[in-house]
Image (cartoon, rainbow, N blue to C red):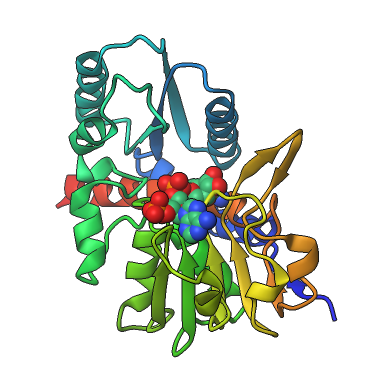
Length: 290
Ligand code: NAP
């Protein structure tokens, strides 16, 4: 039997719909949520992501400004822009599109974003809060994965979750979220990476298998337990096709649920980014009214 689809497009539309009254209220109060999108250079994939984010903002009534800078922009200039955006009252979220050109140290730039405007959730302050179980802004892709599972009533509680990938933006924060003692988490989590010996021994133990390794179709049916839930975070270009980290056609015959690429985690990431932006604006309004 073929797996049920974890439809990220449909689920993200629900998440965005729920944001609308909050955005309307904030706007009424003179605090329309606003984001600044910073793109350095002309990486084609980044341009697509940035355009998607801007389009979503527009549809939801979130104010957005773009800063498109040449690939040769010096690091100090980028940091100066971030500092100015930190002071700008119309801006509640600052999005610096990654990757940055090689002469710029990404960490240095991200560390300069005010934690209150860090709607990507990449600042060490926010990652630290996540780790101790008191998060403010969750990183959007991990949050999107968790939300997708919960909205399909697939709570990770008590489950064996295996994550393939340990990046700072997906694997590690997702593991931190799902291992927390609390509702919607409380899983037993394993994180695999290129140092993992015999990867399939781990993946086959997973009740929920999350692939976030950037390796096209790495996860094959023999690596998946019958009836497992499989979430594919990967976005890989193979020729002119976009594929995930999971061999979708094969794995859907073994799994009980599976997220497609495209149309799975990708749209959820953008929805959660919007949710963080709304939250940032709500926090700004609270501070103003305090
Ligand atoms: P990344 O920084 O390149 O990290 C990849 C991780 O996977 C690393 O920890 C790496 O291990 C591990 N890995 C790679 N090949 C492996 C293999 N053969 N076996 C076991 N582990 C392996 O990537 P990322 O930023 O986390 O992104 C992962 C994927 O998700 C990419 O395809 C990316 O495009 C996609 N993505 C999607 C969204 C979305 O919105 N849907 C958002 C972000 C990223 P080591 O640590 O040992 O190198």
